Length: 382
Image (cartoon, rainbow, N blue to C red):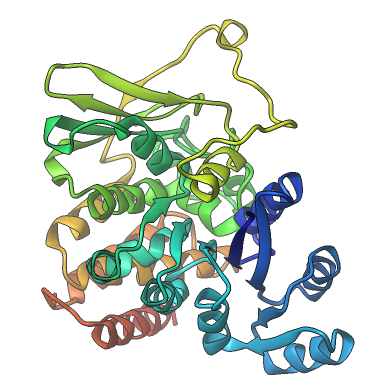
């Protein structure tokens, strides 16, 4: 019987690849609800391609237009629309592929309905990981990672005792500017930053990869998902993005998960878990052709955003909310060419310095701090 899938962020990079997997395995997966943002042409095409009873879009105006064009579909909108899609009664699995902390409340509501979470929205775990994992435990709901690094760690841990893990090793490509010094980054353009050497991703995550904030968020996410101390999480520069991450055990054995840089692999694994499905169209890994793999120690002075993220993670509480919100706001300003590339780090650090940390925040506190931080960052630039 096909698993019923709800998808948040259907028109984004992860969303589109999730739809590819559903198309490739129509006997295994069925799309029952999805959300989109402002891309109405893509949204209409998804409705045509899949028989979907429930769709959410960003604005009420677009919702009315879609409802008139597709009267057989229930069309909702806004934040409440995201919740309705996420917690859709017919869903077995929620693939959360929206960008930013907007994915938090829908995830919590889906957990309450007993829906398995395939999480590609790292900001949800960074912003309020303690609430998500507590709810998942209370409702006995699996949280399955979609990020390639966390999927790799998850796979490497399969069948192993958590008590025997010594260290998690998260690999990082280094992003668009890995061969430039910090001094050389003063005048890089948005287009320069969006040119990732290995992966095809959305603009926000590509900028995060260039600053290495993406890796910082992943370290926090690994801490939340796997309950491993920050002292036992290492970041390793690995240019080829072939080894997606590794787990070292107390006996010094290291188990790595390898594959070509293709996000469809971890997405599909989260959707099909505990089974593995054939990927007919995928490029298979050919190590003889690749020849060499390279590794370097991480330079935390060069990648200051990574250090800020780990500092925020160690501080805990609302500091990770501030980190994430400040980063989202700063990256948005950079993409609009209102600030320089290095200013992203500066704004995040200033927001963290000005914040008075709250150690065990509830959802309302997190949402309040998130909104306040975004406004604060925008005001810094004004």
